[in-house]
Length: 214
Image 1: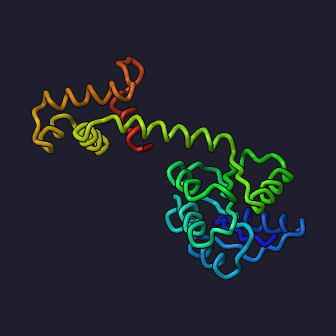
Image 2: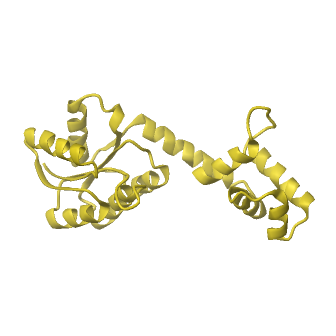
Image 3: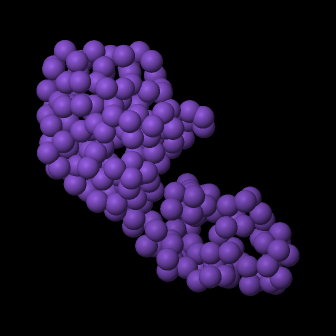
């Protein structure tokens, strides 16, 4: 099959290219950033693009966002996200665009070259290949979003200010509320997020983490 590789780590990129070439595949391009990936796919129309999540310039989620663009602009191109990281928001969006011909595997969990090559074949044939850990994390993120949806508009405002590191007094001033009202909203947030009082956990930090993860 014709394959494009997008991986910013030069050694891994060259290693993948040599591996796939040795198995008879045609690596039509091997690039190191999301923009070059989109250009390579547009130019070569590969069967599958193998994409890392974190690439330049910010090394956060450029690869996954490029993969979503590719699926929209070139729906016939299969995409295998091959990374150390699970980026749940964009992973769910990638699958929402159409799960046929899509895969997401974690580098450290692929123990056999044959399994990796088989995943490429399946994706090229239009199948979906997902690491179980990816599925678990996407489902967990979805549940966190559903839980946050139970918060009222005012409670979400309070939680957003908590995430900025504001104290209850600062939140009261920013939202033109009394200190007591803010305390009640914070208590409701803890209750709805299932965060009971504990001597071992900081509920305010845990609530903010839920907010950020969602």
